[in-house]
Image (cartoon, rainbow, N blue to C red):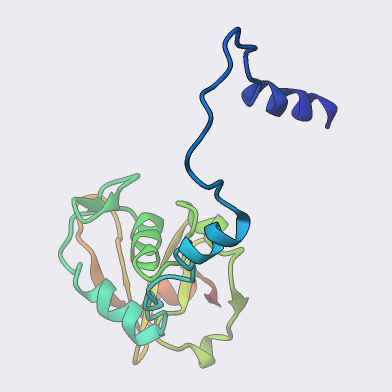
Length: 168
């Protein structure tokens, strides 16, 4: 702490002068004067909170149907599965890592029969994920050569490779 005080003192040190300053004809400003002239600092204009509802998340996700798959991709120019989930949730102010297994650590577990739109769904030993959109369907970026698309949870591969779901 002493080092900080010395550093701060060094910032405001005044060099000695050989001449005397001219007397001031202006009144010295007091703390009271500064308070009167101060512009009140408030919270500023209210910013709307992003809509984090599952329906809004699904609306954002559906806008990207047809975007190409790209391994490591996290933008509309190309998505992989976790990059797609990360991108969609970033649009509602929820930061997620770019890794399906790490995304599984977020939120709360949800039983398959209680899924709601916006829940994350995970498959294949946490190597794949997507966003549940309702009616037994989810949206995801599947694999090279494919595009962002909608699939059914009861399709054989997804049914047999189910891991779980999370609600953010």
